[in-house]
Amino acid sequence: MASMRLQGKQAQIVSQTLWGSQRYIIVRGGTRAGKTYAILQALTIWVLKEDIRISVVSMSYPHLRMGAMRDFQDILSRYLSDFRFTHNRTTSTFFSPTTKGFIEFFSVDQAAKVRGAQRDVLFINEANKIDKESFYELDVRTKRRVILDFNPDHKFWLNDFWDTHPEPHQFWEITLTYKDNPYLDQSQKAAIEARANDPKWWQVMGLGEYGTYTGRAWHNYEVCEALPKGAVLRAVGIDPGFTQSPTAIVEVYTLGDWYYVREALYDNIPLDALAAFLQRYRGTKATVIVDAAQKEIIYRLRRFHDIPAYPCRKTELSAAYAWLNTQPIRIVKPSPHLLAEAFSLRWEGDRLIGEDHALDAMRYALDFTHLPTILSPQT
Image 1 (cartoon, rainbow, N blue to C red):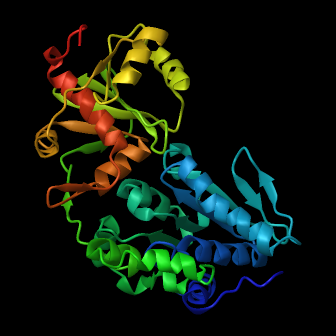
Image 2 (cartoon, rainbow, N blue to C red):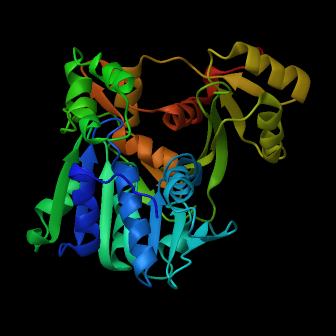
Image 3 (cartoon, rainbow, N blue to C red):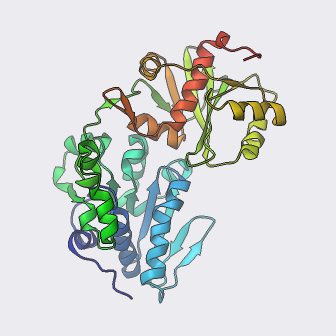
């Protein structure tokens, strides 16, 4: 086995993961700190030594594939070429060649797995992007150790869980920064340090300390397990991406006094694929509402794909979120990106901090559903 160049705090993480006594290992840190990589190194060593079941979980499968799974496969190819893990691509499970143990990867939007079989060790990657209900379901099905990593741009449910836990001695926390990452070269470190004059960013991403983004943009919502019977699809909101950002589609249903919102798509797809996806709404009475700034996309959906798409009404953001917090809204699971954005989007003064692609799509559809007369077929 090639040396994994474990040193300093990375070595502490491995030691605590393998031989520590605490149940909860919390690894927070800034950009390029090597949090996930160090944890996966520890888990790889563990599954080679012991017959153990390990689950690596994140907000969505694309997030896992581009992040933790890529890091894990890099570890296998870089350091463990003599150890042939068997990879079941259907279940995203890697079986140890030396024990009967395995490491599986799945996302919180896979409800059957969240509430499925128990495991020995759980690693939640970017824990601040999953909801606390999913954490509780995963936690109670884990026998030995729960590991969580995240960028601490704000405090979240984990802080309350720790503060109110009857056994606080069961928690171990470590903070990593880019200076602890042995894999960064000097040019990468210099690029990070060039942003030291941005105090808000530097506190979180440079120093790995909790940020001060405390004003949640949207807080008045509930989460439900399934869409109730009788709910009527009223509108479909679209925030197009196509280039560097994902395209988000969110459905809005009504039942009684409640709005039910559900994430339908969150992915980088071309316009033709978007048009094909929208065909599923033919035959419904739902109206397709698109970001008004995307006039060319609206035109092409109508002209070339016969999709009756309409522009949203543009609203000042502070007013839009003030209105949103007065509405009776339930987010239908799994909706992983919508939930993550709802939990993390925050105000810093008059600026919104965080991702809001799914939230924008939801707002467009909700606004139309609430005020359907604002649009006309001639718009």
